[in-house]
Amino acid sequence: MLFHLAGNPTLAPQWGRAALGAAAVIAVLRPRSPLAAAPLAVAVLVNVWLEAPLLGNHWLLHGFVAVLVLASAAAGRWDPGASMTRLLAPARFTLLAFYAFAAFAKLNSDFFEPAVSCAVYYLRESADSWGVDIGTPDQPWAVAVAVVVAAVELSVPVLLLVRRTRQPGVLLALVFHYVLAVDRSHQFADFSSLLVALFLLFLAPGAASAVVDQLRDAGMRLRRRVDPDLVRFGVVTLLGLVVVFASGPASWDAPPSLRQLAVFTWLGYGAAATYLVASAMRRGPHDADRLLPSGSSRWLLLVPAVAVLNGATPYLELKSSASWNMYGNLAVV
Image (cartoon, rainbow, N blue to C red; front, side, top):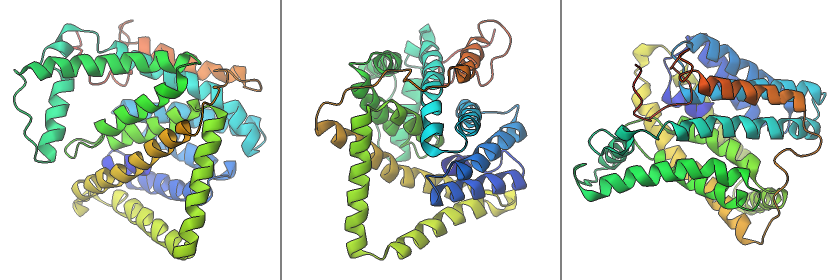
């Protein structure tokens, strides 16, 4: 949510942005409490309504997840374990529905035409934003970039579906979307940060436990060197500044500085998440669980079903905006 605010600080009214930011900070301070997640989910849905119809795909996906968070928490009577058990499978299938349509949208001739391909365009933009000249799109590497991007996006949902390849699929997806979000000119950190949270839901239970153990060990080492209250104060202050600036008036001219803050924060945040997952996988093979574990709320699978319908809407000629078809060189006919 905070990455979204940093990259899109003018899309909703000030009060909506302030409510979203405050709820996000509360959830950071109380991460184990479904009672803290509920106001955040409500704030997301309110801001989805306020920003519509100019919704980004990632923000509509946030809305789907918010519905799942509220429904699973209520069904689990606000117990963290029961809520998570009910949330896991519907959230996984919602992500798969979204990602499969986003990948399918790349299968058109213009995406593989270097002069106009989104893949080539954003790679050059990302390199330029860091002062690196990678040349013009008429060079042989340009076609290879489009092919690699399409191949990765098409392979991720397949890898996540298959039990044996799920863990490598998570790592591939994390690395791919980390690289995408290093662009300093275009805001991708909001999109990638949401996907990181959803990709982690596909981790095998053993790998997820290993990640938590590493975080706990790092926290204990940090406590020996730095006062944890001081660290907490610094984190809350930083998040509070993001909320204040992101919920301020347009005359504050906050967007450029907030976007740069988001990019540099992402460089550390995304790298840490990827490293923790890779390190957990190196600790030993972890057997993936079923995509639909026991205890899942099957009635919540209606949400990913609606996500599939949303992805189909351009092909049914119902709508084209926020239909999981971004950055695919598709033209509305």
